[in-house]
Image (cartoon, rainbow, N blue to C red; front, side):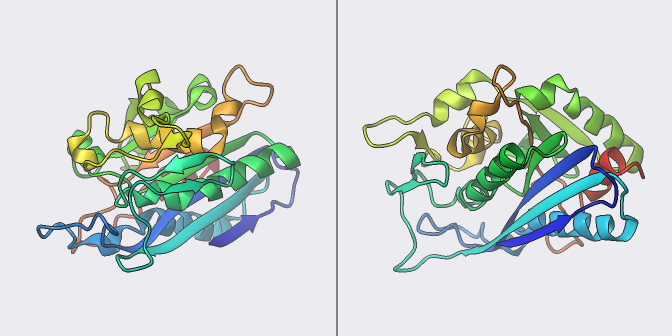
Length: 273
């Protein structure tokens, strides 16, 4: 886990809290990617790379009143005698019992505890106007839904109420990083609610996201449920804005050069560039 923080010279008016998926290589784990679909999985770290790029830009531009905390979740999803398997129950940092459904849904597992830590810091430290993000090449479903070149943004209730998704989409148009907006629905949360005794949350079904209805929305719901962010919705005593950015379609297809999305759009929106 690589943690970076930028503290502005003036009193912060907003706080960005970024979590990036840094899967250096994704074999699929015990649910191994078969049939030639493993090629290119060295790109599964582009979420963490985007977070690193954003922090480099923050260091360069030194915004006067924006506080930024970043976590890059670096891991290799390998297959071997010590890899975890489907049906294992793993307790998250938030105390939520998560049953594994598919080890190839590893990105959400890698980011969940870091996202939970961001939630804890936002509440405990009472950061100024915090906005939590996860950024990940998370699902093949996202790529199939919007196609190459597009990032999908999914907001929780407080972020949606602030008009974040539309603002990010409009900003992306200005800098050449197009976004599409997806909406989280009650069925996304029901899908990931625990099904049997001993579990609170189901990590994934045992199908690829590309063969699962609402296969890119569900993971965002999972991260909300597994981290306790569901306790910080619009009607809570401490609402927290949270947005999940699936960059599977926009990060760049191997062997072409990575695009760096969505660094420019986030910088334009939040750093007044």
